[in-house]
Length: 217
Image (cartoon, rainbow, N blue to C red; front, top):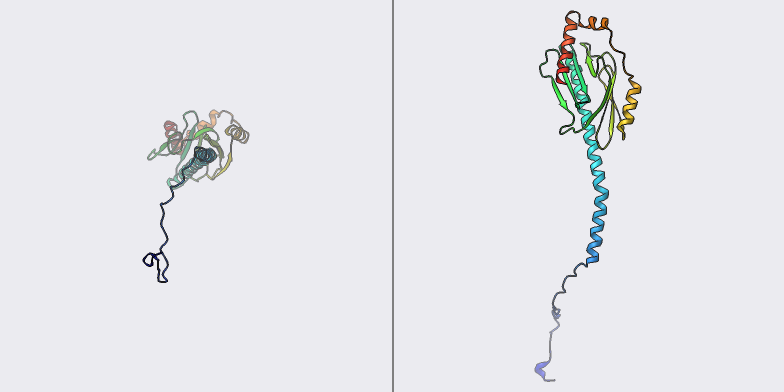
């Protein structure tokens, strides 16, 4: 071999010989199908759970709203030393809050956003489908109602002071039956009781409050 063809590195490392980079490996149809199947299974599991959680949260929010409105009516009766009432209309899926004079009285549509629930039943109360708070902040009797959506149902019990407790269930019909056992259908009012309630200024204020709420329902 000629002298000029000898290679000398003088003790320095030679740079590594660079080759052409390897082409990235593509996925096969089988691998893509396998990944798509995993995503579909995960979605089938996660989506119903998310939907159910959303429905339960919406139902709980509606129960919070109803409880807050009942408490607002009680506080209004005490503050004004008069009467306030919360009436429920299951047929039209709404309830109304009103007080003596009618100022700021309002109705709430349960089927509309953001509540989107159904009023299945109301039982108890001082009058038909109505909780009436007296100037003392108490109602004449306890009461209860059931609301539901596609996710679950809630039984809301209301004591005479307007305090609420809840029972969550998956079947609205079962909670309605429980409500009916707790609050049997009352007998029709007697004429003497109606005359006594409507007599005097207090009776007039009470009748006016009931009329306001009835009009909103």
